[in-house]
Image 1 (spheres, rainbow, N blue to C red):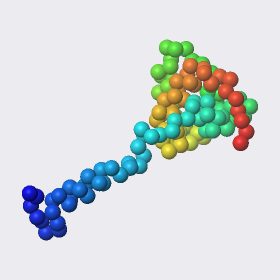
Image 2: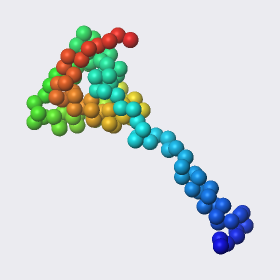
Image 3: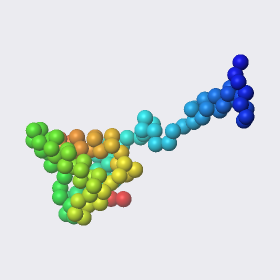
Image 4: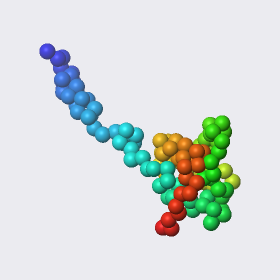
Length: 119
């Protein structure tokens, strides 16, 4: 049925290959736990950007809807690459889907009154 090769049958090789196909894939974003924007702001951003700390600029103020795309692009670039004293945050700290939600919440003003909890 299947030809024999030096290291065993083709059927055995196929069985091993198919068994490997069912192994979990690390970093699979379909199983990612996505934090809410307010939680990300509290855990990552508020330490510098909350008004009472005055380290970084206040980022929770709503923008006019016409400026959302440009402001969102600026936020994404700044979060991923850093700027001045702000460090860059890679996907391990804020995933792309979390960053998208955070940007929507920031530009719309949804987080304007976000509570700050000291850790």
